[in-house]
Amino acid sequence: MTMNGIRVRFAPSPTGPLHIGGVRTALYNYLFARKHGGTFILRIEDTDQSRYVDGAEDYIIRALEWCRIDVDEGINEGGSFGPYRQSERKHLYRQYADMLVDRGHAYYAFDTPGELERMRIESEKKGETFIYNSAVRDKLVNSISLDPVDWNARLDRGDPFVIRFKMPRDEEIHFDDLIRGHIVVNSDTLDDKVLFKSDGMPTYHLANVVDDYLMKISHVIRGEEWLPSLPLHVMLYRAFGWEAPLFAHLPLLLKPDGRGKLSKRDGDKLGFPVFPLYWPYGETARGYREDGYYPEAFVNMLALLGWNPGTDQEIFSMSELINSFTLERVGKSGMRFDPEKARWFNHVYLQKRSNNQLALEFREFLRARNYHTDIVRLEVLIGLVKERVSFVKDLWDQTDFFFRAPENYDQEAVSKRWTESTPAMLRELIAVLLSTADFSPSGTEASVSSWIKSSGYNTGTVMNAFRLVIVGALRGPRVYDIISWIGREETIKRIEKGISIIGSKKK
Image (cartoon, rainbow, N blue to C red; front, side, top):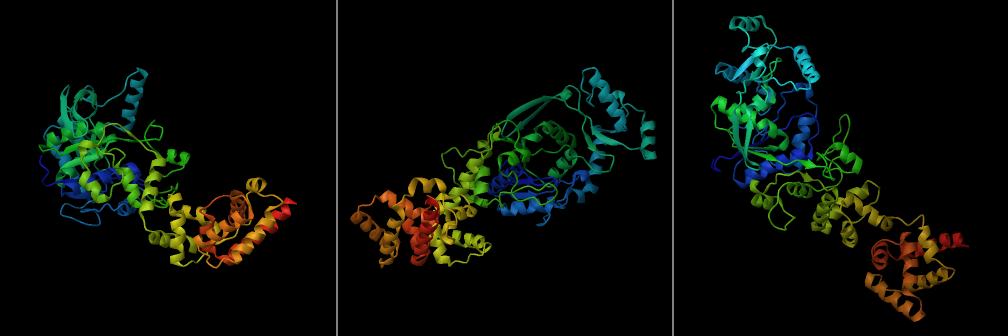
């Protein structure tokens, strides 16, 4: 198949919040479509109404929007191959199931759930596994074993039935996967899957294949969990006489320790999200957006969880990802998720933002705490601390002392850095600062350094005590930058407050 007419789809089920593994599947489909000038389709697969969750469909749409994964055809965008919600296409599927029955590739099965359960239990007692396949179907209640008059009468009476695919006996099924290469499966290892349920709805297998064909999907790019279904899907295409799309099954996203598939439980236990957005329904779940991640950083991180560009480059814009992405460089093995690496990506993207951008974002955070600061002053502040943080919300932990004087002082620092002579030394420092005309960082540094040198004080002794009364602890950027930002009056007030409170406690 050539790369002309590329059409790919992301087809999630609205059964809960979209896992980041699903977002990665959508991303790879999107990158592939854009790389080859193709079409990216969003199809909602909601045939299993028993598992449908209110809000999940909207969540999927909002998650893709946040990631800047633009949909070309879908339930909101429309298109020539709709409807794009499977529950609105259910009138289509019965005719295709009947077509397979008419051609001898499927059959009606009347076995009740109770009868099938009894057979499973009996097989387990013998140490065997019950499989509804070519070895047993002749002995079960279906249109293969029953007389045509009998099974037609059952249909006429309205007896419950399902339609099962008639998997051939002892046949080598050959097919190819763009990531995993050539695969051979013997049909005797496969069961006769249900294609059409007794409730009048198709199963995933039938609906998926029919929809992909009718929507002219050229490449099916999906998660590894669907690889066991691939032999059946290949056989369905053959039974219909249709050309199958090309398949590519993506590796799993693994827990940080590499032992098993990444789950919400892992995120809850280790303190990171496994969903793109906050999930507000039922058992709520945190999201990358609400945790402060930039969508560009999130997408960049996800892209490299399974795909290798073949170079040392790690930071990619969306356009660079599109230009570089190939299925040939997607690995077969599961990819271990590293939450620290995810934070690193956000750190890099935060550093790339201008001080003005970050100041505007941080200003909203400050306003919620009733601090109102000029944007130009905030830009100066951002420039002092941005390299220390990975998220905008972390700016507060690095700058809280710019906005409020310390109420408490780090006791370990006090015990190590505060002596009987410290108050007198700090009062001299107050006099120096009051007489300093230029209160810029360079101006105060020049004055204080000259005073320290002429008075014979130890620079570390002075500066540690100075920082302690200004900040409350031995942290933060250069003291001269801090006092220049808070101003002379606030600086003097903090020194005097520190002398009063710490001095009284040290007596």
